[in-house]
Length: 108
Image 1 (cartoon, rainbow, N blue to C red):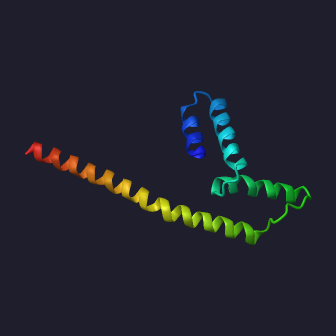
Image 2: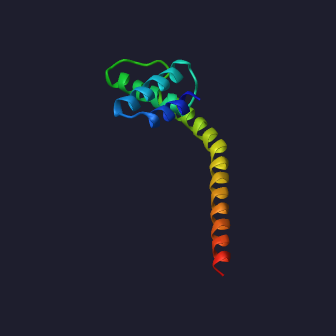
């Protein structure tokens, strides 16, 4: 919900600064709450890579850990969102076809 709210607030922002501030504050709150999600991983993985490149050793960071975490989250997101998006696209296509068939019927 925090990520959705961040996207909505960024969409409603009038300036670039408003949009960036909305995204940073709410996504940071989401990450600080400790939720496991691809958004949190997109924050923590680059941070761990940066720490590694600076010579610091982040605990528990490795390619296999990253792959397991991202693959599980990606599978869950695809498993839950693909049917929802497919259904909404199917409903929109059905409405479009119904409207176009009514338009053709009114022309005859």
